[in-house]
Image (cartoon, rainbow, N blue to C red):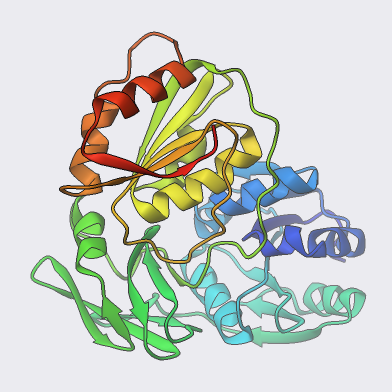
Length: 342
């Protein structure tokens, strides 16, 4: 019986749709662990009791105690992308894996998962049980396929938009320390530049996805105290929860897509953002933000350099967010306000 299993819930959709409640009532898990930044936001907004883990799902599985019964819960954008996600997680895990894929109403038993438990879970949920083997890495030789794309939507690698899909499968390959578009994608030079800023990327192990990071609007919380420390998020919105704490009064976010994601998450936390952008945003999430937020666009140069210059003016001691924002706006002729929520 699946009772007493550990569910690793991935993505915000299983919380936004309420499927986490349906699955938990059917399987009676011992614990629910949330993997993913936007999934954490959706989980916190839902009020569902769970534990948060910043690692990717495959590493969450690897770090479970020996003998723990791991169940992956996901709602892919399409059934094909949901199956591929399960295949990737299973191929990187060190134990059999049961995968509940809500997009196709399927319970996958990967790599020798117990057939009785898999079929029983499918019966309780009214899903189909399917058994598969994931005996390969995410990449095929020197290429990486990102399946389940929709033409025109953004494609992410390690949380950064690197291009736009032109087919249902985007294929990438490494090239001279960079990334080559093989097929199904038009690369975004600035995105590749940002991705490679931290060093070479192993495409076979990178986190890749396509489409918006969340389809539901954020729940905007009451603003917290305007006095405290200011955090900086530079083109890495996935770091947001590691950077903010109860003493954070505001966040400087550098980059268009980073600002959109930080604004969404910080709205839920009651934290205003000062977003530094240069106008190359993709539609990755709704542009929610908390009271006290200001989004600016640079009028010369790039958001990368200007954002770090602005971040360099943050005082080391606690400060008043509104005073810092007003002072910054007065002293920077190279930016213009594009959104003001003060």
